[in-house]
Length: 197
Image (cartoon, rainbow, N blue to C red; front, side, top):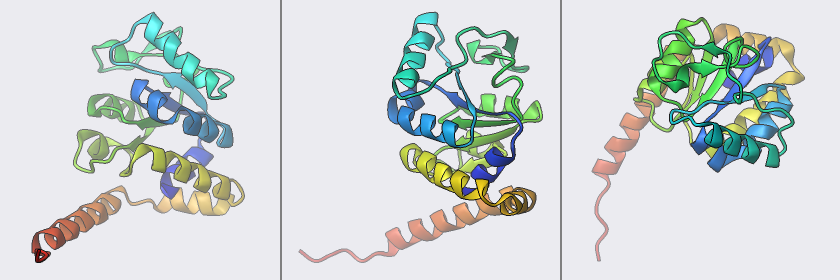
């Protein structure tokens, strides 16, 4: 989460991509994070209709967002066939760093192919999203977003530390540590003696 914050703080054009699940679970947290960075917010949906995009934009505005992109897409993310390819040049398409919480792997992979830093938030470290994101955050959404915000606020006060974290971030090592912890945890659960009744 601190590495995610470092990349967001150092970005020239950071964007938070929001789908329906993210808006339903963490609209207020997303808006707070966007303000702290500051970053743009863009709605991007798999099952996209104008009504759904407007509804999700409304949820974000109600949570305090001043501007929500995604209502008028004017570009396509290369390599995606569905409506998830639609984006705005002023938002995701033109971003250098994109936070893609609860996103699927092919879209995350397409953003990385475009040369963007893609930061995922996913509970599953084995998911395609976690395996393809530049910075995979393996945590629950409503815990991860406030944690990232906390680190953003800290790193805005310490540009050298933000630069050091971004420069030395070890994606493979981070995932390996996560896999090792899960392996240890699962082995512990299997070995735990049953309680007597």
